[in-house]
Amino acid sequence: MPELLPQINSVEDVKRLSVAELPLLAAELREYILEVTARNGGHLAPNLGVVELTIALHRVFSVPEDKIVWDVGHQSYAHKILTGRREQFATLRTFGGLSGFPNTAESPCDCFNTGHSSTSISAALGLATARDLAKESYNVAAVIGDGALTGGLAYEALNNLGNRQTRMLVVLNDNEMSIANNVGAISDYLTRLRSHPRYNRLKKRAYTLAGGIPKAGSALQRFMDRIKDTAKYFFLSRMLFEELGLTYYGPIDGHDLPMLLQMLERVKDIEKPVLLHVLTQKGRGYAPAEQDPQRFHGVGPFDAKSGQSQNGKGSPAYTQIFGEALLQAAEKRPGLLAVTAAMADGVGLLPFAYRYPKRFFDVGIAEQHAVTFAAGLAAGGLRPVVAIYSSFLQRAYDQVLHDVCLPGLPVIFAVDRAGLVGEDGATHQGIYDLSYLRAMPNMQLLAPADGAELAAMLEYAWCQKGPLAIRYPRGCPEYELSLHPPVESGKSVLLREGKDLLLAACGSMTGVALKAAELLAKRGIEAAVLNARFVAPLDKDALLEQAIKCGRVLTVEENVVRGGFGAACLEALSGLSMEVETVALPQEAIVHGELSLLREKYGLTPKQIAARACSRWFGGEDKYEG
Image (cartoon, rainbow, N blue to C red; front, side, top):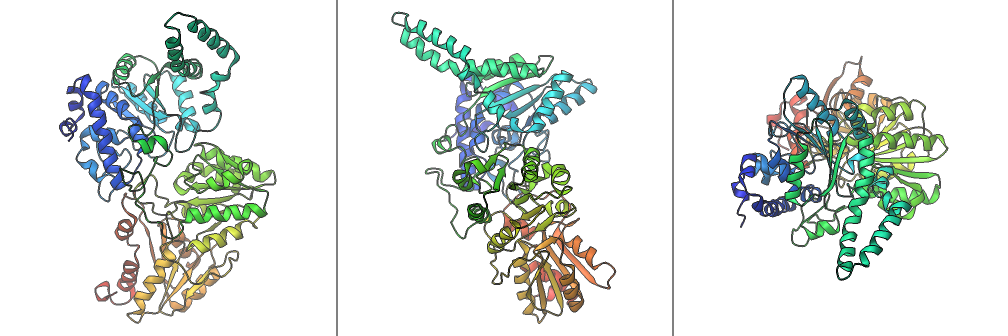
């Protein structure tokens, strides 16, 4: 039974504990985080790694007056528990429960909404500058992981911070692993001293001298083995960050609470920017996560004792279908390359990386660079595929427009996690890509209705000469179509004939529209169903033909209402005497929760779509018996 955690109802309760009690609190926090994450899913390994750091920050700083900005925010579970949300934590990532990321609407102790990487230093510098302009004195700290330091925004912020010399703290949480193994020059920089001749000569001389000391020699050599990594980090990191204008301290053991407390007390009031380098172990305290931190970075429900997932296998997921199709295409097309921004496993590229390592490029958490790098590959005569989550592609909007679409370069975007993503919430919902991608010149934008259609669209994509994006949802196809004609440029497919109503749908909502048409048929309403396939260019001819035939149009999509598929249909039908209803997501932050609950909340189930049609045109929703 926990002894200390039930007493923690605010950060003041943390401050009342003795230093000797803090390791027990850390153990109880880990146990609670493991229990809830095993049941609800979530980001386990990063949260287990920062428990002591979180306790120390809340002992030294006083939120909400002081400000702590958690980069990405997928390591903020202990922070939530210690800041008055202990009992609510059991609702983590559930519909109506706590968000998996910092959320200012939940607590004043969350000073900034986060969810995407590399933003913390910029946000913290803004908060610290606002403090100084208001002539206030509170502390500001940014907690950023080594993986997030591969993102260019972090260096833009460090450059500005060093130039402004604003008083604030940057805590570098260095666990040597972000979502995937860190890549690039920054990761190399933090390990380069190990091979430097001068460093190795000095290490060898000291090691030999230590071995010659009677009795104590071997013990001293073992001690030197333990500190050699510390020397490496100290010299190289100090050079990097102090050249940028920050005062560097560390590295220190991120699980040594007395040391953490001592160092935070020492640096918190220094009147210039400070970087504290903390070494932590991702997944600490839970053996399966320690052994496989990548798998346990973000997980669905699992058995806490064994670490095994509780999800059934079912049909192949869209991500798996994409990965397999890419492998098959690469066998025939030597110019086909794959690019990812630190998400090789998440977007299904690991098999490709293993089979074609020279044709696979992981650029780190650097989406803007990934897109322009791919544009350069395409300009050099190759065919790059950029596999990326919908919400992360937003970070490279300008690069997609300026570097790919304006020159019409043949870059393929595999836009994963498009539409509602569920428990990760507002920052990760992929509900804007239809709106921003269809507005770009030269862009073909496709949305498959099921897995077979995704594979067919990829086969179509390899043969195109300009930019093309295929957006597909998370998980497995909910509905499988029976009709799969070949993909033709800009052409839709009529899946069901009808005369009373046209249901025009795209992507994941196509199967939903078919089910809605079946429900309407029970009331004698004959609804046609059009699978758009292409959102840009839209098949205007087919849309107009069916709209005129039916006289009424209801569009269905898993995208925000403004600028999406429904808006494209309205543009195509403008000037006609036509009744059009658009079913889409509202222009608001979409909450987190299970996909089925979210679709129910936002009216995207077959029954709700049928009821919407009845309410608008066929005698009212109350008469609908589907």
